[in-house]
Length: 86
Image (cartoon, rainbow, N blue to C red; front, side, top):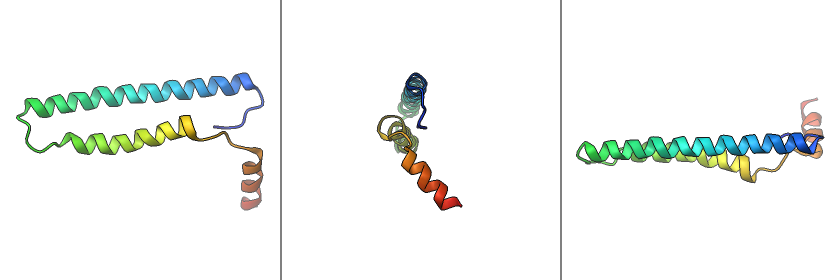
Protein backbone atom coordinates (compact mmCIF):
# COMPACT_ATOMS: atom_id res chain seq x y z
CA UNK A 1 0.00 0.00 0.00
CA UNK A 2 1.31 3.48 -0.84
CA UNK A 3 2.32 5.84 1.90
CA UNK A 4 -0.34 8.55 1.89
CA UNK A 5 0.05 11.83 3.82
CA UNK A 6 -3.61 11.97 4.82
CA UNK A 7 -4.47 9.24 7.37
CA UNK A 8 -8.13 9.34 6.29
CA UNK A 9 -7.18 8.59 2.68
CA UNK A 10 -4.90 5.77 3.83
CA UNK A 11 -7.74 4.30 5.91
CA UNK A 12 -10.17 4.54 2.99
CA UNK A 13 -7.68 2.78 0.72
CA UNK A 14 -7.19 -0.01 3.28
CA UNK A 15 -10.96 -0.47 3.76
CA UNK A 16 -11.36 -0.77 -0.04
CA UNK A 17 -8.54 -3.34 -0.17
CA UNK A 18 -10.18 -5.40 2.60
CA UNK A 19 -13.57 -5.26 0.88
CA UNK A 20 -11.94 -6.36 -2.37
CA UNK A 21 -10.36 -9.34 -0.63
CA UNK A 22 -13.64 -10.31 1.03
CA UNK A 23 -15.38 -10.20 -2.36
CA UNK A 24 -12.59 -12.34 -3.86
CA UNK A 25 -12.95 -14.84 -0.99
CA UNK A 26 -16.74 -15.02 -1.40
CA UNK A 27 -16.47 -15.66 -5.15
CA UNK A 28 -13.80 -18.31 -4.51
CA UNK A 29 -16.04 -20.13 -2.03
CA UNK A 30 -19.17 -19.92 -4.20
CA UNK A 31 -17.49 -21.05 -7.42
CA UNK A 32 -15.53 -23.87 -5.79
CA UNK A 33 -18.58 -25.09 -3.87
CA UNK A 34 -20.45 -25.22 -7.20
CA UNK A 35 -17.57 -27.16 -8.79
CA UNK A 36 -17.51 -29.69 -5.92
CA UNK A 37 -21.29 -30.13 -6.19
CA UNK A 38 -20.95 -30.59 -9.94
CA UNK A 39 -18.23 -33.20 -9.36
CA UNK A 40 -20.45 -35.04 -6.84
CA UNK A 41 -23.47 -34.95 -9.18
CA UNK A 42 -21.40 -36.31 -12.06
CA UNK A 43 -20.64 -39.53 -10.23
CA UNK A 44 -17.49 -38.45 -8.49
CA UNK A 45 -14.39 -40.22 -9.81
CA UNK A 46 -11.12 -38.30 -9.73
CA UNK A 47 -11.46 -35.13 -7.66
CA UNK A 48 -10.84 -32.68 -10.51
CA UNK A 49 -12.01 -29.55 -8.55
CA UNK A 50 -8.76 -29.97 -6.58
CA UNK A 51 -6.80 -28.18 -9.32
CA UNK A 52 -9.04 -25.12 -9.32
CA UNK A 53 -9.19 -25.02 -5.52
CA UNK A 54 -5.39 -25.22 -5.19
CA UNK A 55 -4.50 -22.91 -8.08
CA UNK A 56 -6.99 -20.22 -7.21
CA UNK A 57 -6.27 -20.72 -3.50
CA UNK A 58 -2.62 -19.79 -4.06
CA UNK A 59 -3.72 -16.55 -5.73
CA UNK A 60 -6.17 -15.91 -2.90
CA UNK A 61 -3.39 -16.43 -0.34
CA UNK A 62 -1.20 -13.85 -2.09
CA UNK A 63 -4.15 -11.44 -2.17
CA UNK A 64 -4.68 -11.93 1.58
CA UNK A 65 -0.98 -11.37 2.23
CA UNK A 66 -0.98 -8.12 0.26
CA UNK A 67 -4.05 -6.80 2.11
CA UNK A 68 -3.45 -7.97 5.69
CA UNK A 69 0.28 -8.57 6.14
CA UNK A 70 2.25 -6.38 3.74
CA UNK A 71 3.16 -3.07 5.34
CA UNK A 72 2.86 0.31 3.67
CA UNK A 73 5.60 1.59 1.39
CA UNK A 74 8.12 3.58 3.39
CA UNK A 75 10.10 6.66 2.43
CA UNK A 76 13.28 4.58 2.83
CA UNK A 77 12.06 2.05 0.25
CA UNK A 78 11.17 4.84 -2.16
CA UNK A 79 14.60 6.48 -1.73
CA UNK A 80 16.40 3.13 -2.26
CA UNK A 81 14.42 2.46 -5.43
CA UNK A 82 15.07 5.97 -6.73
CA UNK A 83 18.83 5.46 -6.19
CA UNK A 84 18.66 2.10 -7.95
CA UNK A 85 16.96 3.39 -11.10
CA UNK A 86 19.17 6.43 -11.56
